[in-house]
Image 1 (tube, helix red, strand yellow):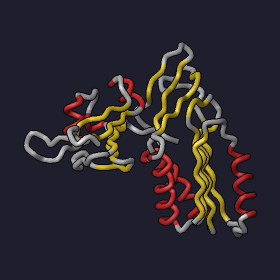
Image 2 (tube, rainbow over the protein chains, first blue to last red; image 1 turned 45 degrees about the vertical axis):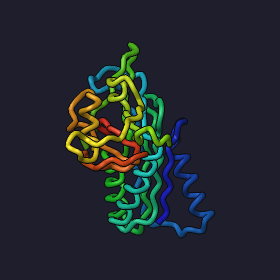
Image 3 (cartoon, each protein chain N blue to C red; image 1 turned 180 degrees about the vertical axis):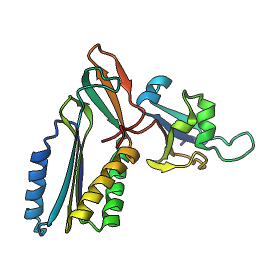
Length: 150
Length: 87
């Protein structure tokens, strides 16, 4: 199983990360996978109240967040018989429209790739210690107390 | 460790809970509860009078999710985690 998981304090360019991952797999002589499923999550333009959002701040629990992501990805990949997983997750201040998260699953068939991608995403949303704070244009802010509906 | 001092545990708060409580990290002496039982996260939540409902937080001990009634040991890092919202 090949897992690559990173927390990024700088801007996340999903397609650049994807291309880098492909190059790395090729360089390490991994055979190419026939199916690949990808999810990119971006910051909305408005907050939970529908007001324009200035930025989203992502806090995490250093050490535990990285370990949880590894464990969650490992369990999901095992469950679906998938061998490759890339997770890139932003921390710090993220602007509307910018990517927060990239999940890519490489598998032999589309079913496991797509199901595993969704499972990894739901697992990290609910069981990896991240917290979101919405910053409004008036300088006020609020911590979110849960996730948006699926 | 000074043999005259009780062993400590480290307590950490995050995000909105940290801001409501007004602190991020504290060290707390590991003393048994009044009934002689081992100290648990639930005991500490009550002792520290932390804001909000205990049912809304998750517990981590040494950076692993744990139950609220897990006995604590000297040197443990206990974290109270408000509702998670990643991805």
